[in-house]
Image (cartoon, rainbow, N blue to C red; front, side):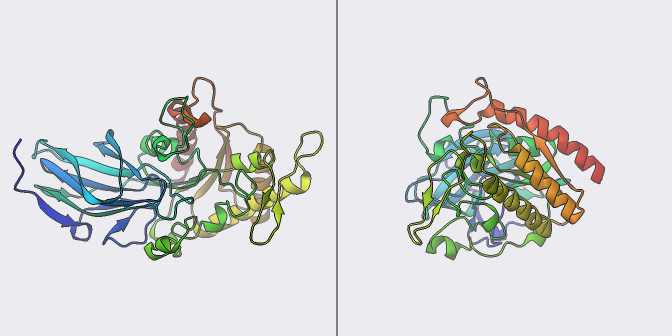
Length: 377
């Protein structure tokens, strides 16, 4: 096939019909995609489409998935540099294609050099409007919500971006089933109170009100990651919180010592293996406080605490937190849903839920949210 001489470059700012998914700073020159599941979406009538990306990293490279008409057709690692990627070519230029380029990997708190930006597209046709969807859902979670292990063989044990997927993921599956736009706020190993290793700085609530506050470094500061997020710009109908797994794991992990202050942190077990009441109460208090923060910023959303894909040891504490919050505030738009536990048949890479486990969770969550959304309409 000869080179297409009809390709025309369009900066993102020049594209009238451009839909952006995920929290961003609002800047388009270039557009920085921070979170897993964040994406650009276009409806194009063309025979060929290219995307100009700029990727960087010190340790963990970005990955993307390309979906055409809602079906994944390509997945690739982005090496460092600024360059063009061919999304498709040789297609019927009279047929409209819905194209979504999705960031497949979570924001990497452990790599201040990791970034993914989109500068422009080039094509030989026209852009058409992308219809808004009737619902909006925000998902908040840890490695499960980041899709860690949802792609790759069960034998894989390396902690690398290759084994993360925003597509083989209950968030994407649930949103698709409900015809909803969605956003994801997630980080492997993090919790409500502490991370899996008792680090109190590894908690999602403290960074929730920033664009992508769990990142670090001057580069991410310059990209706007630490700016206050504009909640008015995107109000969800439902906020799904899938946190608690790593808080539970902290009870079984060694203490974490702060090298700056010298202080140690540890979620303790009693001699009989039960959770120390003071420490479980600290989790309950943190969860209740987080619900307060969620309600402040998402005033009309139903808050759903969905938990259980890797066991339910923290479920009683989650119920305590939700009950305490509801009684204290009178807020009835909050509930708890137990998700199906991973099994030997549904396990994925890195001993995490695989695609089948995500499908099962999405099925349960979809049915539950469908009733909630129907009640709001």
